[in-house]
Image 1 (tube, rainbow, N blue to C red):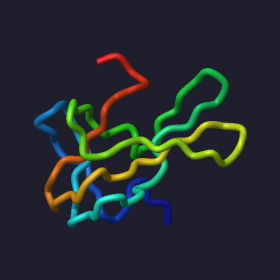
Image 2 (cartoon, one colour; image 1 turned 60 degrees about the vertical axis):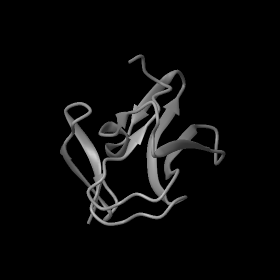
Image 3 (cartoon, rainbow, N blue to C red; image 1 turned 30 degrees about the horizontal axis):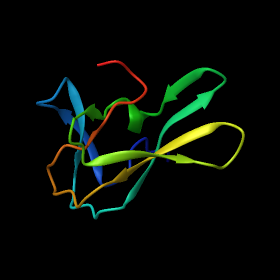
Length: 97
């Protein structure tokens, strides 16, 4: 069965903006949570994981570029330990805020 999010995450109402990604359990620092964005030609496509993460000036996650094939891909990796119930955030670099 297809699951758009890792077992450790859920989508809830965010205090940052609209809906956001939240930890359903404690998550360790340097955990790779999966694919957030893909780039085909000049178009950046968000996955469900990338579509719900909100911006923060002091984020607890980062996009890490993968060097797998001719298309660019980014995964979401935690920068520090994340506590259950905490919102995951990212510094936006693809979009104007």
